[in-house]
Structures are given as structure tokens and as C-alpha cells.
Image (cartoon, rainbow, N blue to C red; front, side):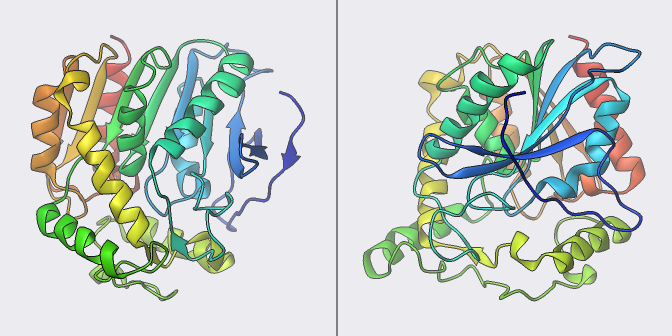
Length: 316
């Protein structure tokens, strides 16, 4: 691996980064820094079977996925993951570190392409498999619009492919964009202003301990979590969903795609996910009952369902 500046990372007393991890800052072409972590099986008794790029959702960060990274290491994969620009410990797009801001999701896909071509393909062996959760799943799928040679297979966890009330949301976005600045909090987003959401009111997971674990990480470094979304981010989401639904490209995707779709999801719309899956040329979808949005942060029995699906799918 070429020399990059070391990046900080968080640990808890009973929740450590998997052994062998490296945390670095990688400058993008516009000099914005992306925080990336990797685990490379250089000195192992068993050679790596491939490399997994594990990508987070909106307002997440690498540390949240230590448990999942260990699950992949136990399966003898190299693992790479990074904080999308504008969140985690990657550089922000605007002066405020608390707002989720991006003007175009293709900025994210350019970062993704750069990291795959200039880091992963040069430094890691074996086939590349992508796992993307929520917004990360959306971006992995969108990346196929521009390059279908990156991944041997892609697994999407509760991908952000639509929202229940998106017509109203996007109508309001068009209205707000006329009268409000792009970097203002979206009028109806209800920024948390740094306050924690009690477990009983969360819409992410039914697992108490994993939910509290994430809160403890945020308490160690509050700036790692954003307070809310901006007008620009909502508009970029609307435009990207429009792109991702253009049939003239998504029904030509050859990369094998697996979608794990939690039916109790209250963040994204499982029905929209099913609609997209029907139109993808080479896609399998697995519906998971009694599961909230964050499958990989769910109860053990639900996480086990995800990993069984993963193990069966990558044999293809």
C-alpha cells in the first residue's frame, strides 16, 4: 500500500477494531480527504478468497461495522471500507460539519471509482464483491451506470431505492429550493441537534445492545454524527433516484446483484425495492420478515439470515 496519512479511529472497552486494521486518509482529485480502513490478509495461513468493499449508509461511519468486518475476515476476505465524503471522519463539503450536504451523488460514485481503480485493484487480490447498506447500496447500484467491470457481485442491504412518501417529499424539495439556500436544513427533516434518539423511538433496529453501542461511539466523538440533511442532499437524492430508475440502463446491468429487503423497514420503502428488483436483469431478492432497516445491526437471528444469504450468493 502506498504511503498515506494515518487517520484516527474509535474503540470502546468491549468493542475493538478487528486486528490488522489500517486507517488512512486518501485525498480525492479535488483534495477532499476520504477516511478509509482496510484489512489485508498478507501474513495469514490461508490466502484471501477475495476482497469485499463494505459501504455504509447515510450518516454512518466505519466503526459501526467492526462486527461485520470481523464476520468477513472470518470468511477469509480482505476488507475495505470508507466514510463517504461529508460524513464520518471524511472531509465535509461545506463549512458546517453537522449537515449532510452533497449536490450530486455522482460525486460519491467518482470517489468510489477512484478508490476501486487506484487503491483496491492495485493493492488487493481476488474478485471484488461489494456490500452496500441503504445509501451505500444506492451508490453501489448507481456506480454500475458508469462502470460494470468493478465488481464480481453486489449485495445490497435495505438499499435506498425509494421512500414511502417520496412524491410529497420531492414536491416539497422543489418548492423549498426556490425559497431557501442549498445548505440550509431541509424544512421537514427535523434535525436532531446532537440529541440522542431513545431506543424505544428508533426506526433502525430492534437490537438494544447494538443500538446502544452505536450511541456510545458517537458520545466518544460527537462530530462523527451529522445532525440532519440539507436541501441540497434531498435534491441530490431525488435526482439520483430518477437516474437509477431509467430503464435504458438498469435492465442492462450484467453484474449479479443480491438484495436483502427487510419488510419492517421504516426508513426506505421495501415495496419500491421489490419493484426495482423485478426490473434488474440479474438480480435475486430476499425478503426478511420482522426486520428493521439496519439488517447488519439487528438481532443475531436476523443477522444470521443475512450471512446465510451472502454465503449462498457468492458461490454463484
